[in-house]
Length: 166
Image (cartoon, rainbow, N blue to C red; front, side, top):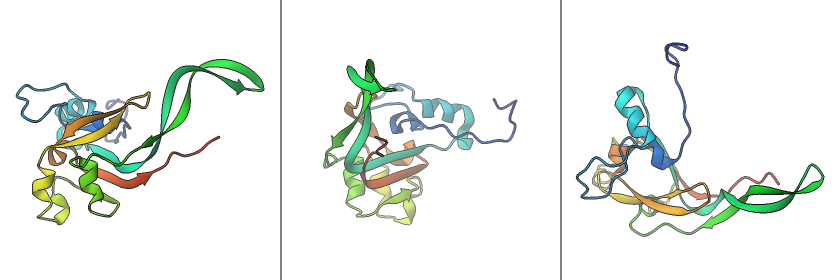
């Protein structure tokens, strides 16, 4: 792709877990951990790669349900595999990245490497925090992050709601 489009930038949308600059690890883990898409891109492209994480405090998300359902398609009732649904997401765990960001009482775009110009925030951004992620079927899971190492930018929204196309 680089040969075909020299000098151009690429934007790749993926989950926050996969966007991390570092492999999936847990606090105190010595081995390298499972690579993420972001860690592979960071290894290959260095500072030309920008890892952007997106997280939120609470709300509803749109998830794909894989169960077989009956719905009307083009005027006919058909069995289809899966359908979109909305899933309520509770408030984040008290020690999580999301809970810490909720305590700031704001929405923001944060550069975790620089501490966003707030010296008191820097040690917190350099520590381990669980953060929320979702699988394709809407399963909530918790992974670990050190924001200052994992992301170049972190977008935080206090409350989210899925769009409604129905």
